[in-house]
Amino acid sequence: MSDSTELTVRAVMRREVPLAAPDTSIAELARLMVEHRVPGVPVIDDGELAGIVTEADLIQREANVDTPSTFAFLDAIIEVDAGAPFDEELRRVLATSAEQLMTSPVISIRDIATVSELATLMLQHRINPIPVVDEHNQIVGLATRTGIVELIARLESASS
Image (cartoon, rainbow, N blue to C red; front, side, top):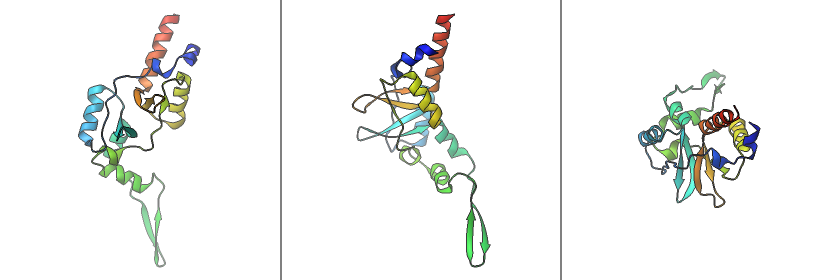
């Protein structure tokens, strides 16, 4: 896919992006993702990108929380934890709004970045989607893995 190194994020981003406010309910976030067929919804607060809620965030709410194991030793209670931070898991499970569930700060990408830079960012940080911003840091799109796969399909079809 060497042709994609010269293409910018504009070639793969979705331009119609559903947005959420910090007080948007979990049910509304899920509805927005389903209705718009996107893997995440950016959260905007006072015109600024404040966070993002992804499918993974919603799914994590339904997962079992690993409570830390404790044991008594002398007069102390020792907490043993081999999993994700308990406070973070609990925060997500108890969330009722976008603000409580969102990931913040958000990793975003400029619309003039290359598709290769986008793919690298997605893989390095294990994130999907990534909000696309312009030179004024305003959201202009949403880059997804699906968008990159669709580009690969188009390029491969054209070269066959």
